[in-house]
Image 1 (tube, one colour):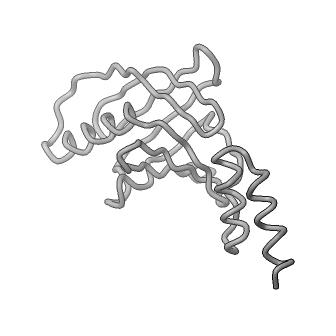
Image 2: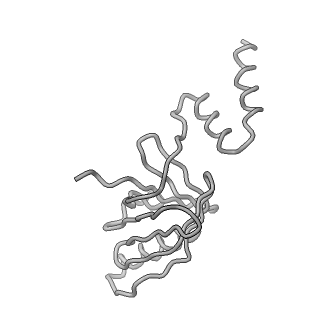
Length: 149
């Protein structure tokens, strides 16, 4: 029994960064590990804080780097800004957006999406090819790739 515990504990001690500890913990618990991913390309806004998909919401991440750009729509207006990623750390914005008026419920969702995107500080990827963008305060946006045509 003790030998079974020693190997996982030794591996956990060797895992120096938070992401490695998280992946090891998931593997030891029987959950699929978080896999590496890439934000570049097209995404749909699949879920905003557990409230469901954002109708018409999409993101497009350009090539990462010092001048990486991200743009999309949060249901009404188009927006764009910059993005930088360092492992699981992510910085989006600042954003500029068009100023079209839409029904109040749509504008409310759009306001919440843009506020969350500007507060995002991390990204994690799922085994099914999706991604979660998260802010320090616990707000999350789940992304999924659009279906192939």
